[in-house]
Amino acid sequence: VLGIAGRDIPLNLQPSLTLSGHVGGLILYNGSSIDGQVVLHHGDVYRERRGRPLSEYQNRLIIRESPSLPFDSLAIPKLFEQLNNAHISLLSSKNVITGNVLFSNTKDTLFKHDTIVVLGNCQIDGGPLQNKLLVVSGMLTVQRNALIQLCRIYAEKITIEDGMTDGSVFYSSKNTSINGGDHNSQFFSGDTLLCKKNASFRAMNVLACFQKAKNDSIICGGVNFEPGTRVKGTVICCRDSSARRVISGPAIVFGRGCVFTGIAVTDYDIDILDMQVKGHIWARSITTSDSGKSYTNFLINSSIKRPDEQLFFPLIGGLPAKVRVRG
Image (cartoon, rainbow, N blue to C red; front, side, top):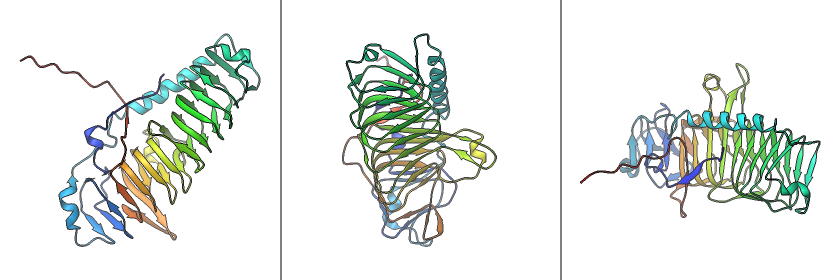
C-alpha cells in the first residue's frame, strides 16, 4: 500500500467552503470573511446573525446538494482496511527482530535489509533511513536526529518528537502524535491523530484518520491540531457507518490561532475558531464553542482565503479516465 498520489485540485473542491449538511445558512461573525465561492445546501450568508443576506456574497454563493465527501465514500474505508491487513500480514514475516530496537547508526547491519520487522517497540534517532519497509508491532518513536525518506512504516502507535520525514507513508492502527519535526509525508491513523505547534508541515503532507464507534456513545479518532499550529497539506477524516449514528464532537478540530494552508475534508463536522485558512474546506457543518456557548455554522473571527501557493489533492478512488475522441 503506497498511500495516495497527488494531483491538481478537482473542480468540486475549488470553492473556498462547502457545507454538505442541511443547517440553513452561514453566519460570518466577529469580522470573519471568505474570499472565494461558498457552497451551501440551502440558506444564505449573513453577518453576525440571520436576517438580511450579505449582497457581496450573492454572486459567489452556490446552492446545491453536496455528497458527504468529494470523492468515493468507500475509498477511505478500503484504504484503511488495506493498510491494516498489510500491517497484520507483515508482522508474520519469517525474518523478524524480537525485542525493542533503536536505529541510530546507519552502519548498523539492520539497515542493510529492505524490509525490517520488529516484534516490540522501535525508536529512530538517526539516518537517513531510505527506501525501507519498517513494520513494528508496538510503538514507533521518532527522535531529533531521525531522517526518514521514501519509507513505508507500520506500527500500532506512532509518536514523532522531532526529526524529518519526506515522501514516506506512516500507518498506525491506534493513535499518532506528531509533536515536532519537519514533515512532507502521509500519515494514516486508525484512531486519534494529534499535531502540535512545534511540528512543521509542507505542501504534499497528508493527515488522515478513519473514525469508528467504540460503543453507543463514544467515537474513536479524529484529527486534532494544538492551538497555534501551522499546517500545510491535506487533512481527511471520515467515519464508518456505525460511527455516524453516534452523536459526538467534530471530526477535525483546529485550535485557536492555527494557520492552515491546504484542503480539509470530512463527512462530519469541523471546528474552526479564530484561525486563518488558505485553501478549501469541505465538511457537514462548522461547529465550535466560545465562552461556554456552542455555535453551528458560525465562522468566528476567522478567514478563508485563496491559497497563495500551489495546492495538491491526493488521488482517492479510481484513476481518471482518458477519453479519446475520434475526429
